[in-house]
Structure formats: C-alpha cells, structure tokens
Image (cartoon, rainbow, N blue to C red; front, side, top):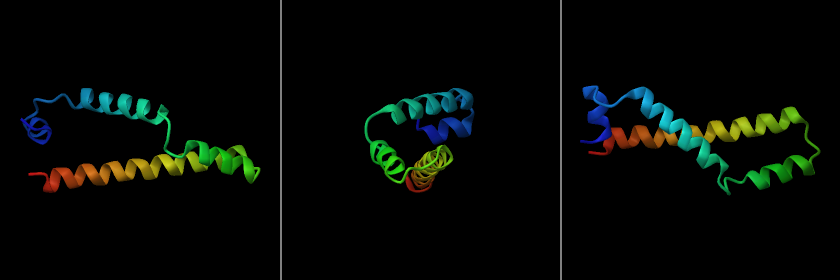
Length: 80
C-alpha cells in the first residue's frame, strides 16, 4: 500500500508521520552542505546583523520547504 492510499484510508497516523517528517527534516538540516558555510561567510563578509542572519536562515528554510512541498504534491498527483 502506498502512502497516499494509507492516508486516504486513515490507516496511517498523520501525527506520527508529521513527527517523523519533522525529526528527519531537522536531522537533515544538521548535515553538511545546504550552503550553510557560504551563507555564514556572506553574513560575516557584509558585516550583517543578527536580524539579517535570521532573515537569511528563514528564507533558506522556507525555500527549501517549498521545494519539498512541490515535489510531494507532484508525486501525489502524477506518481501513479
């Protein structure tokens, strides 16, 4: 049974799925990459403020999450 069918039939616990997604997403964010070093170097180079650093981090997180949502919706729509 695929995930979409499990959710539609109510056999998947949505809260458990959400908790797993948040946990795995948080762990994924701790991994190397995602240009975190480059963003930190940019903030240091332009002598950015804490507010600018927070805004940069939030915009990176939002754009990353948006891509995941688009991919998930595409998979549910056209995934067969």
